[in-house]
Image (tube, rainbow, N blue to C red):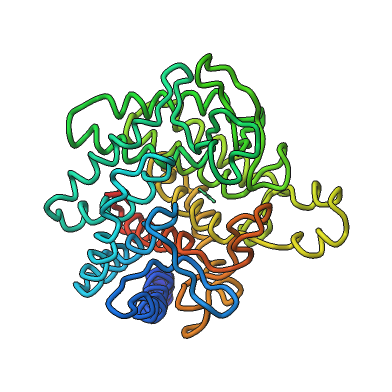
Length: 413
Ligand code: GLY
């Protein structure tokens, strides 16, 4: 009897230790994030001007203009801090940082408005139902819809009349990242009852499903369409090491994007694609390092050889933390949809890795950003091995999702 009691006590103690551990990684990350972000919030205000922190380079915080594709992530990070802590202070800060993006709803010259407005206004609407935020979402969807090219059935990502994009000979480039803008369309159709946005989103998702993937379910970064005939002109890369390589963040957007497409449509083909991509990337041993924080391009070692020893010495070991954070967040939702523990185990492993000193900054360092070691674009020579505001955004999102799943709740609200 005594032995049985002792065993029961041990099991209960063991369980409570396990539960405490699970809670602790979330709690501990919240404490850490509060300390870091409280600094960054203050640093973002100068002489009554609110600025948008994007990264920390050469000892200085970099701030971006509102039309930069990353402009919504800091506001979104603050909304997630409100969600994680319940502290009104973060909601107030988030609201301020959201409303400086007011004019983005009318921006039509690139596709990233889905990211920018959904992360900021979208989260604000969901968490606080602030008056007028619904109109901003609808206006943004209208702006984004102007980029739909019906003959090709896709939303054009970049314009080709300006910047480095004008030097590639493209006509109508679509990048895998564009899957991330569909959440806005799905949501606006749900809110307004107007099916047109969902129809555009599904057309884009179906074309991406058909045209962006290789047979092994890795994705190209860029597919250039002829917007008049719908023909595919070229499949290539902009931010990966080579046209045939697997740029890490592209693979991450691909899992996340198709998971969201399934959430809003219930179409099995989207779920199947998210699973196929996740299975392929996570199961093959040579795809991911042991800690599941990918190299900035899965194929940097192979294609890097052609670039020479100097290139490999400089870029061959660089990880992209933002990709791990995006994938972890998507995998929690995929786990919820499939009830397959494999996805949660992998997501947990990613969160554990990102919570170690190898990737998470010490309080007071890293310019106030939470995570270190992300990559913007090596081919463009920008933001290499630095913190990035979207890595922090998806990391906090993943923590929220993990917490809900462990309480038996749907991770996404
Ligand atoms: N959407 C741009 C990037 O992932 O770098």
